[in-house]
Image (tube, rainbow, N blue to C red):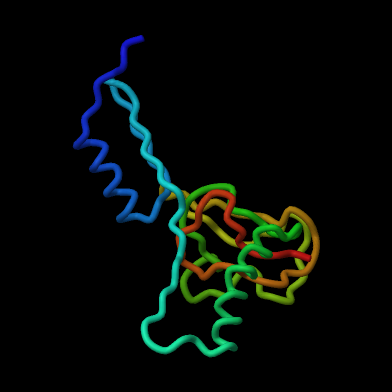
Length: 151
């Protein structure tokens, strides 16, 4: 089996794009073949120089990753079906589609995700109450990222 030649500069350029944009994967295809560059999502590691954290601060910093893991495993988590930029309201300055504590019905628009200059409505998969909104408007989201919780 013949191994296709690759352009190391192209791979480095794609890796730089991943770093600049915060994406975890990019792929291009041309006449000469296809190149896919992927990296594991960055892990946030906090280090503190100087005096040790107070017990309350240490407990709070340990609870934050646990809360994020709970949100990801929550059965009512509404997940992003695509990579893009999430918007909680139909236009800047407008009221958000939903707020915590608000009841929603199945099929109701929860937010928008802009991908490739197209705004995609993300609808409620079921009826319930929005308990938490996990993203801020205008932030990039990844595929399968929890966006909000409906209970």
